[in-house]
Image 1 (cartoon, one colour):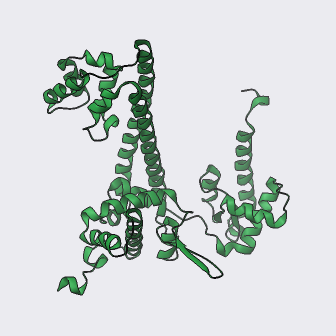
Image 2 (image 1 turned 90 degrees about the vertical axis):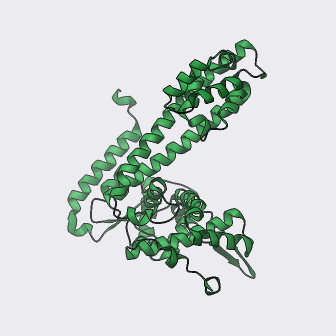
Length: 389
């Protein structure tokens, strides 16, 4: 690329890193220990470089920085020197109200990268699957009826193999039982191929409505293009899941997380990725619960007061907590009775009862990580005296 067309963003990042290296060498480690740095992001190459020094790095929320900017000027002007002044004044006056970046280990940060990437790949796979389902509903309803009894539906390799073999319902109706059996075997199915092939052939050859021939062929080509994206998304999700299964058991906290009901390798890695392994990150269990949005928030003004759920939260940890609370009652009688008590006695809806269960399980996890203890059913959910009698 000619020098006149080089990206200014690339030059800016390079200049920032070079400037940081020069200032780090000029200041020295002794003065670095007494200085603090503020930045509006927690994930960047510059942040990774800053964390290698002795300075404390504070990641200031951009919305909070915008509110502080209004203290100096109401004209909504913005510049890099002005933002630097705002960040410096935040740390000078209100440093106690902000938290520095957690001092997580390299293994915990690597697990966080893999767990978040696997979660994004799973969401991408589901989004592509929904797009493909919507397209099949327009011209190929027999395919949806064929894959309905299968778990994960269109994401299964048998479904993708059949769609590649017959992208249109006209071609699907001409498939023989031998061709369908061969497709199922190529997808990895070993048992019940003959019975399944008979069922699929009967569904394909039933009387279904059809689009015009040219339109059907065009929709089939569009479906094949989406199918390529779905296969790539499925492969990425599976590969990242394997990487998480390899890295997560190596962490010292993995045994404690896996001892909790409802937490397996993938979900446990997501929880560890969001809370980290820095024990000083949260002052108490209330901070962790507020971070995960499992505890309610009180809004009071004058004579009005309301208790509602939190809107500002860690979305990834909150999503993992919902799945955790959804699966915990299947492996814990105490969690199941707690959920039923919230539904029957307190009148909570399903989501509210799961959020309350997640709030309690999160407090237990905080204690177990602090004390280096495994989850115990009797300690977590003691039996009331009346029930024991």
